[in-house]
Amino acid sequence: MQVSTNTTNNVTIYKIDSPKKGDCGESSCPAAVAHFPETFGGYKKGTCASAGYSAPDGEQDFKVPIWGKTVVVKLFKKPVDVGSKAGNVTIYKINSPKKGDCGESSCPAAVAHFPETFGGYKEGTCASVGYSLPDGEQDFKVPVWGKTVVIKLFKKPEGIVI
Image 1 (tube, rainbow, N blue to C red):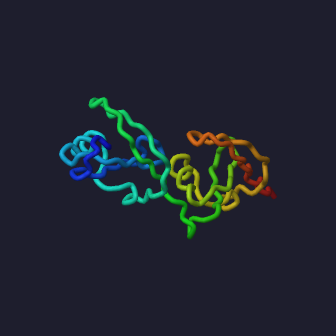
Image 2: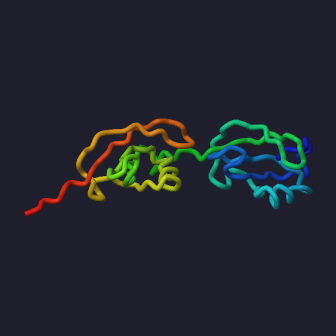
């Protein structure tokens, strides 16, 4: 939280998902008062890069509660890993977006942890859990992200009765 132009006695502090969800916010703060944002705001001493957020994503003004002053916070995202996280992975979820079906979609590997963590999706295919009969497609607007993706729908095949 940059509150002074004198950088000789400043420390760098950061917080993930603040002030913008999905980013890491970083700013300079006078060392003598850094304990306030650390204790009451959940900030940590260090840089966003130390937490894996090194791709610049702009800046944002942030009004500090109680203090009332506005500071500039530098925003960073996690970089896209071109190695093992390159390309797409297939994710699925049973009963989503249609009850009784399994919904399957392709997702960039670098961000697949979001639908897995927050949406209950799993990496793999519907066929891997017994849903192998195609049942159409459905557009699905992803919450928070706001983009619409196409979900392929699959049903479980009926058992053969003798």
